[in-house]
Image 1: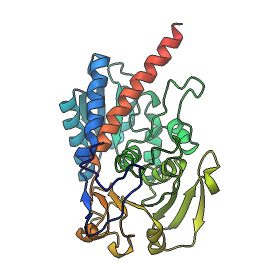
Image 2 (image 1 turned 90 degrees about the vertical axis):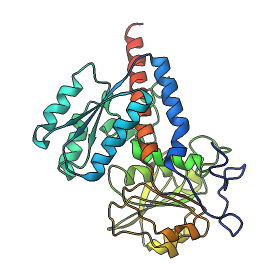
Image 3 (image 1 turned 30 degrees about the horizontal axis):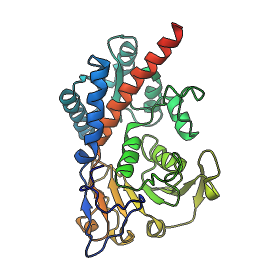
Image 4 (image 1 turned 135 degrees about the vertical axis):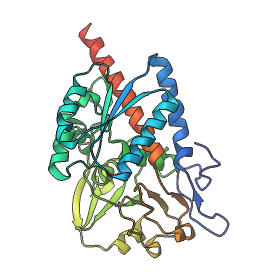
Length: 333
C-alpha cells in the first residue's frame, strides 16, 4: 500500500473519520492497480509466454466498448495478447464454442449485456469454466456464495475464480484499510457495515455476498427494496445468509462505514446528506453516482474502478493457467 495515497488509515486497519484537519482524499483506480499490474508482469515473466485473452463484443453499449478498449490497452501495456472479436449476437454462442475449443486461447470474456436476462445467464454457462476470466460460470458462482475459496479444498492448490468487478471492489477496500489485517483471514470485515447500491447478478449480489462472507454486515439496495447479508451474530456461520429488512436507504446509509454504488444511470445520484461523516465511498458504475459534494462528507472516495477491474481480470487469467497446470501435473503423476 502507498501510505501517501490513503493517509486516512491507521495502523490497526480502521478508517479514520473526516475532519477539518483530515479532508477527503480522492484515490484513483490507477494508483490502487499499480501493485497488481506489477504482480501481473512478474507472473508473465515466470510463465515465459504471452497468454491470449479473447473478448466478445455483441452489443452497442458505450460502456461495454469502453471496457473493451481499456482491456486491450492494459493487455498491450503489460504483455498479454488480447483479441477483440466483434460478432452479431445471433452467432455469439457458436463463436464462444469455437474459442472454448481453441487451444491457443487461454481466456475468454463476454461484454454484457447481449440479450439481457436469462439468455445472458445462459451464455455465461456456454463459456468453458477453464477459460472464464470473469468468474461467471456456475461452479465459480456457487463457490462464491458458499464461501468455498478453493477448487481443491484439501490441497488448496487451485483457487476458485471470483467475478472480477466484485473482486476489484474487495481489493480496493483492502487498499483503503477497510479490511482489518489483524483479524484472521476470512473475518477481516468483522465490525464493518457496508451499503451496496446495486443487486445485479453480475456485480451487486455477488459483491454483497463476498463482503458478508468476509464478516461485514451488508445492506444490499435495489429498486425492489433492501436486503441484509451477514454471517450471523458473531460471524459464526460458514457462509452468509440473506434477510429482508424494513429500513430506508437513509437509515442504512447512516449505519454504514462504506457506501458502494453501481447504478448505470446518468440521472442517479446517491443523496450526499444520507452519508455518514467520514464514510468511505466507492463508485463502480461507468456513470458518476456521487455528487461533487461527496468530498465534504467522505474520508476516502474512489470515483471509478475500471483499471483495478481489468487488473483482476488478467489476474484471473493467470490463475486459470495455473489451475490448468496443476491439473495436468496430477494427470502425469
